[in-house]
Structure formats: C-alpha cells, structure tokens
Image 1: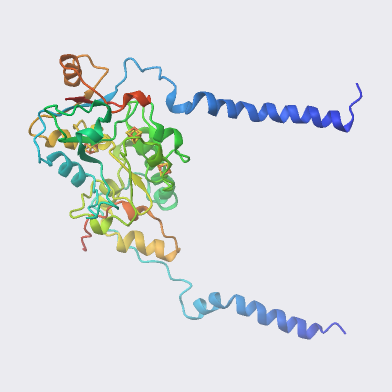
Image 2 (image 1 turned 180 degrees about the vertical axis):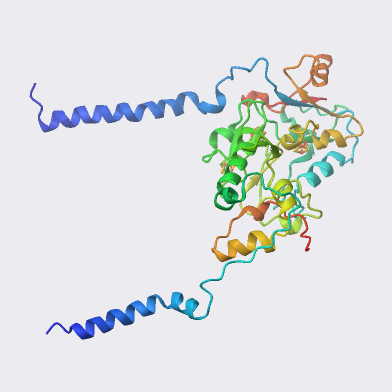
Length: 253
Length: 128
Ligand code: SF4
Ligand code: SF4
Ligand code: SF4
C-alpha cells in the first residue's frame, strides 16, 4: 500500500479522533464516573436522610439554625447580600412553588431548608476541582482545601443551598468553636449533614437542638430507623423532584 | 588585550555582591543561628518519632487531611500500633499548644507560611 502524505494524515487524524472520543464519551454519557456508579454495598450500606415535619415546627423558633451555625462557625455578616447560611427558612411558596394552594392552612409560613444531599447532585457534577463530592453514605461534602471559589456549584444547585465567603469570615463569628475549622475568603460552604458528628455517633446538631422533634435524621437503608417510620406513616414531598436531583430531605406538610 | 585583570576584578566584585547576605550573616554570627523552639508537651512522644515528624510532618498532615475529609476515616494508626484522632486542633495542638514558640519560630526561620491556620483554630495559647 502506498502511503502518501495525505493518506498518512488521514490515518493520523482518525487515530487522534479515537483517542479524543473516549474521554469525551465518558463525560457526555456518564457524567460523574466515580460518584454516580452504584456502590457494591449500596443495598446494605448507609444512606443518610432527613425528614422535616413542617407542622411541628414552631413559628419564629430558630433553635436548629442557631445550633448549626454555632457549632460550624458560620459567620454572621449582618447583611443579606453577603449572607452565609447552612440551614435557614424560606416562605412555603418559594420552597414548594408547584404546591401553591392559595387558601391552604399552610399559607405562606416559613419552612426550614438546608442542602438536600441529593442522590444525583448537580453541584458535584460541575465542580472542576472535585472540592464538592458525594460520599458513599449520601453526604454531599465540601473539601474546603480544594475549593477555588469558581461558584459553578452555586449556579448548578437549584435550591440555593450554598454560600460563598465574600469576606474573611473569622471576624464575623461571635464565638469560635475550636473543634471545627472556620473558612476563608473565596471558599464556598454549605450543610455537611454533620459528617464530623456522625463520625462520633452523634446526630446532627440541628436535629438535637429541635425541642419540637420536627427534624428526624436517620439511615434510609435501615427499615427500623425512625426516619423510615416517618416516611411510611405519612405522605411526604420533596423540593422540586422533577429536576431529577433526588433530594433526600423529606417534608411532611 | 583581553583585559584579564579587569574581568577578574569584575567577577570578584559581582560574586561578593551576590553572596553578601551569606557573608553578612557569617560576620554577624548569625550563620550558626538555629531557631530556639520551646517544647512544652505533656506526652513523651509524638504520633511518630521526633526525627520522622521533623522531616515529614507536612506529608503526614496532608495525608491526614485527605483521609479525614475525602474518606471520612478519622483514626490514625501509628507505626507502634497506637491510635490517634486525626485532628490538627485537638491532637497536634493539644501538645504543641505554644504555636508561636513552636510552629511559627521554625516556619519563620525557613520562610514558609502554611495556610493551615487560616481556617483551623488555634486553641488559646497557654504560655509556660
Ligand atoms: S441541594 Fe444543592 S448543594 Fe445540596 S446536594 Fe443538592 S444540588 Fe448540591
Ligand atoms: S466554588 Fe468550589 S466547590 Fe463550588 S464548583 Fe467551584 S471549586 Fe467546586
Ligand atoms: S445537618 Fe448539621 S450541618 Fe446540616 S443543617 Fe443540620 S446541623 Fe447544620
């Protein structure tokens, strides 16, 4: 076979295409290879989730928010534009825009919201540094050492669950908890489902702080868990499940 | 013709200028200076041997960080089998509670500024 320059380039070009196609297909077809693949121990392993009983939640009470923000050194910048929040409240109609019933008993009362620790989290998929990643137990975790503050994750999260530190947070923390790091300017943060407390066998700080027992945390893979009982006993809704994110915060409304 | 003398003189002047900091320290007696660290620990031994910690604490801490944050494993099994909580503030700084006289002195000497303490909290330094 006679190979002239033209033929050689053609073969080379096809070869290069072949090399380029593989990673491209991986990205297009599978999204996040590492996190999305089902784990071998998926059935027996843990899957943390939370149920929020909106009816038990007392209006005006901020115990869960205060507890979370104080153990995690969440700064209070005193201005809504720079606000950093891990758990907070939103008007009912904003939390469940598709559930709006004008004359319902719920009205437009505030509802507790936090990161949904989604099964299929868009924030993880877009993070270029893998600073945001999903653990086997379902916790969508932040690695503050890696975050470059590009805020792709903030754009991708449909629930507004993430905040950027526009300023150095330390001077804005009233009482620093030495057991938890603070963050620095240019780093994104959010609820971490109290990964550091779970590691010590404790329930999340917000759940512990709620006197009304409106928050229930537990392992979805354990059929005897309280959170499973709640899900069996009542009808629950999730925030915008139609987006396919698979939120793991369940609301009893 | 080649101005050897001038060139040599130039080279000598140049060399003495760029090595000035070294000479300055030798003459000033600073060359032999090593940072005087204050070790005020309660424990007799660190998580690994002193020599190992001196040269490798940064790699060890990096490993701890990755293991805790990425893998969710918080227990370090030392080479002598003892178990430690992989925690900069609680484990390391529990002993080395004089950050200014221990960590900083050496870091200043070798002119490295690790960013650990931008986020990790130093429990109140107790001077002893
Ligand atoms: S709620 Fe937002 S931040 Fe939390 S896992 Fe889902 S997409 Fe990510
Ligand atoms: S801001 Fe940080 S966590 Fe968010 S996408 Fe960028 S690097 Fe990842
Ligand atoms: S689970 Fe933990 S981190 Fe998340 S909102 Fe509750 S207290 Fe805060």
